[in-house]
Image (cartoon, rainbow, N blue to C red; front, side, top):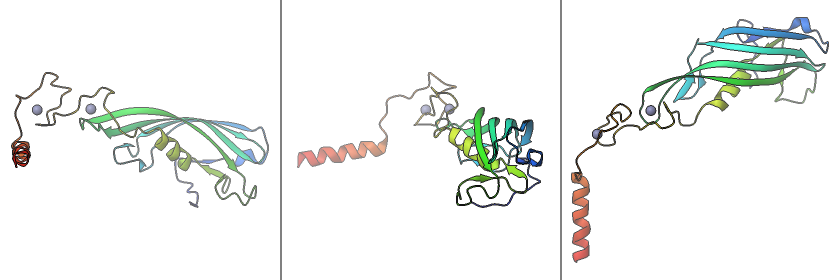
Length: 181
Ligand SMILES: [Zn+2]
Ligand SMILES: [Zn+2]
């Protein structure tokens, strides 16, 4: 969990001008490139895609409170028809970054480190919470034909003649035999 702040990261912000005064305010309205690996196997933020950060940093005595939103792009694959999904999401961000030495036993707290704060863990957690478990290209995606794999969204009238798969036909035959015995 403990990671050292990397001042070169686009998501690390210098807050030295805050000192330790409550009431200082700084607005951040920035486009930053997405770091690697926000998301999961089925849907994720493309690496380097622009993230629209719109944040207010506020000195609150014990630390710096970051509040705002991040607009992210998402790319994934529809769970039903496997087409590529390009979408966007806006996530709410809020985190209190404690100054070093405040509540030293609180190992979970986000911290101001070397007069900087790192928004990446916060952004990562907020985006992952917003991701759909089962991404769909649209809520009523018709999926693929279970027989031949044709995309049913493009071929709404697609269908097959009633035919019994040979594997099921032979199983049905066995069932009848058992009943006869
Ligand atoms: Zn789909
Ligand atoms: Zn088919």
